[in-house]
Length: 319
Ligand SMILES: [Zn+2]
Image 1 (cartoon, rainbow, N blue to C red):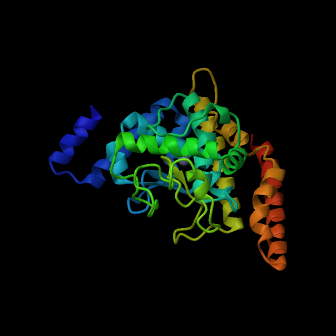
Image 2: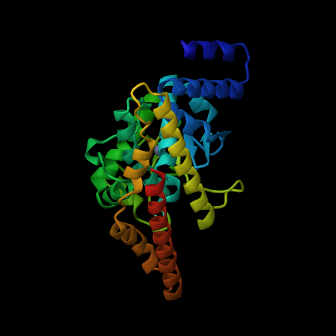
Image 3: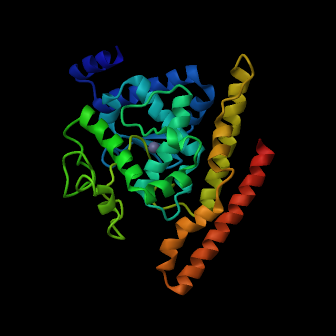
């Protein structure tokens, strides 16, 4: 029904950007009816049109970016799912946890960690949303390591993303950065050895990986520069405050007094990070640096550990 109304509006010459914006607003209002908590998180994130650099939707922990075509082409119930997906990235603070990991592989890992939680909560996603029961309960860092070490697991992810692109739209598969070698939808060069070939060069590692629906980008300021540690910490504190408010609002509004579950999601995502894994993920790039640089990086990481421990303390006070 809504898609039909939308088609009529566009046929009558209404501006595509306006139609997309209205559709997003309608989705946010619908979300309010089903989840006050999630809706209040969504309301706190500014919507920015970014069709030139975003194929679907994305968040940097501060804003939600969107592609007009994607908004117009996606059904409303699935669009609500993608908005919640972006909120989930923010709640789990995926925008600040990537470290030195590859951004494309990090997107895939975080989606596997997030989408199961989202589907369990009854939301719908467009085809191609990365879901695999074997990752249930795992943190993004663990999933990243599996994908980084297991070519079959990585190929499964690539196939899931590309199959959906084949189904929904045959002509846009090579749009972003699949570059030269392969335009048939596999996203990586070759069939069998594709995951392997994506690992080959140090700089272009995973550069051919396709992007799943609903990306997460590193937190950045308005000029696109990465946030300083101090600002990242302030952002984290602000998110935790919003999560606490969202949960208490949901609790107050619900008939049985149950909360919105946002704080639980945040805790699941970050409360028991395996620091051995974190160090290990940082180790390979560190080894290739000069010794002084390497020492600086170790100091940086230890600083991150301290900030994390402070956050944990804050969390126990807030919740
Ligand atoms: Zn995502």
